[in-house]
Image (cartoon, rainbow, N blue to C red; front, side, top):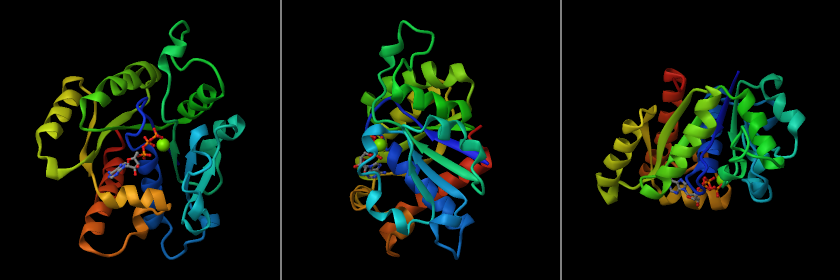
Length: 237
Ligand SMILES: Nc1ncnc2c1ncn2[C@@H]1O[C@H](COP(=O)(O)OP(=O)(O)OP(=O)(O)O)[C@@H](O)[C@H]1O
Ligand SMILES: [Mg+2]
């Protein structure tokens, strides 16, 4: 049983998209031929208080994995590793974490219910997945996330480049890879490319496994299957 926490202080880098789609492809493999949520060995959990109302809510009943809003359930979060029948838990975290709030304290996560929920999931995390975009604005928050929150806890982590559009050329991609390597962070070899389909799908509450069987949709979906495979082979290191 593994708890994967998707985390970056920076908002909008794809935390929710990655959480839900990793849960979807994992469930598609482990839970084949049975799309009832109730017997699924996969759960996607959100501790983002802001995400509660809209978080893939419209499709909850159709998904082959459990989907739970749990930002206010500390006891439940502490128990994440003991959920009966669950093999993989993917946790979506808040859009913006104010790491300065805890500057005076030993723990930069600071105080309050959102910080408590984050601490609770990090306490049981087997692995942290850190999405980064190919734009310099996401570099500093990523560094703070890794240096202040993840490394002090000693949790294995992997940085994954998300939302890179091949039509933009490789310059920004190479720059981002260079930044990650210069910091000696673990970088996923999978790059999750930008597809309009992903943004449209999240608005519709659709997950990658529900995309149509055309060429573009297959390519968009491939990135998540590939990343899930990489996580399970390399174990996030
Ligand atoms: N690979 C991608 N291709 C296209 N659009 C993407 C991709 N990844 C994320 N997006 C879009 O970017 C936006 C932000 O993504 P998402 O909501 O997953 O980020 P987040 O980190 O959870 O944001 P927040 O910090 O607000 O919680 C969404 O509109 C989403 O559909
Ligand atoms: Mg989100």
